[in-house]
Image 1 (cartoon, rainbow, N blue to C red):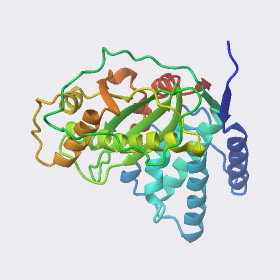
Image 2: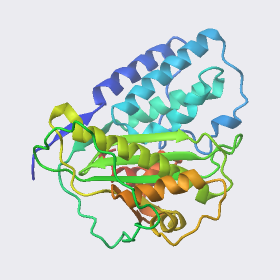
Image 3: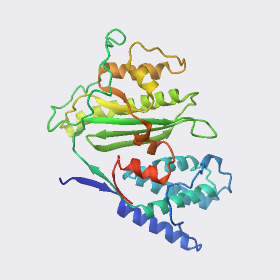
Image 4: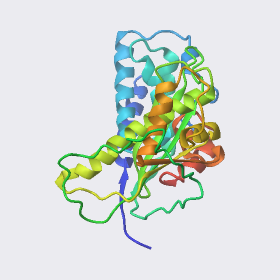
Length: 317
């Protein structure tokens, strides 16, 4: 047993829920009870054709989404997907979107005991998940970008890792996929990202490869920042381990002999492979059933949601 720091949004969530309940009481309405998931089962905001909100209601909806976004920033990763989905309709929301916003607050009221623990434990992933490859011919000059004025590293070194996933063609209207990534320093999540992709991809392979490219961009930035942090550089131990549940993406990104069969992905393909060749990331496969990034890409049933959340933060229902 050891003492650690933790971050919790409990107090902020309680006050936010109270404000929502106070607003609802003016119209003799109440938050729903016995909520298991942040969004109603099978609800798709892009297929909601209920009444459009008037100007005052729209302003209130925008405020609710702003509060929910801040709650996500404070560590409630379990609501990041529904908040991301509802954030698409800030300009012209509908009554159904507003009701789902209330649904999220009802969920937060019921499940309000979650915290992110700053665990300094070093994770040892071993080498069995990762392939060693000679890239000297394919990318002879590949190297990680290092800060030119990097301070002398001090203190204990840290290990970085990342889980990445994509929900292929998740949006029923635009058929765009949804990227989710989670970056850890030691055993603590420090970056959570959930966003619809900017382009339509014809395959799961394409959407997962783009998600991997986004993850690598984020990893390169955080490694640079850690080395420069507060002018007391944090030493990094080894490369960043990335886990992806698409075996085809892992093979194409880690084997120099692989060739790209999707002509629409050449930049993404080479960006990921060159990062591996530069040595600041390594990419391994993880089974989809245990990939915590499903929390950042999909609307999950309550039991599975909370099971995966146990891999991210300290959770009590």
